[in-house]
Image (cartoon, rainbow, N blue to C red; front, side):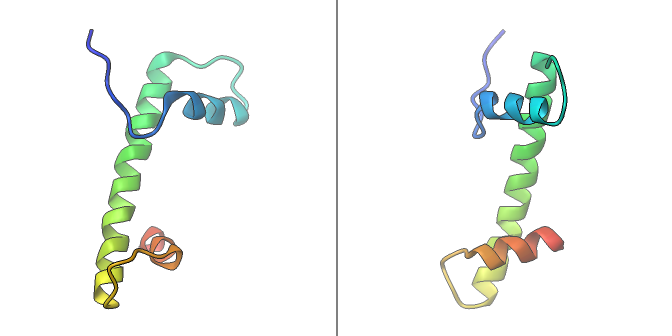
Length: 71
């Protein structure tokens, strides 16, 4: 089985699940949440980029991310 390279590291995702109350975490659960967070993060980043371009900026600001997350 070939290993996937993730943008978001697996260890912090596992800690996130544990901090939510899990005693044990399966590798498949970590993998699934990594994939979901990556896809959602890219989706929000693309929206934020559109917002910054619409505002005449090349720089994506925190407010762009917040607004993109609300859309």
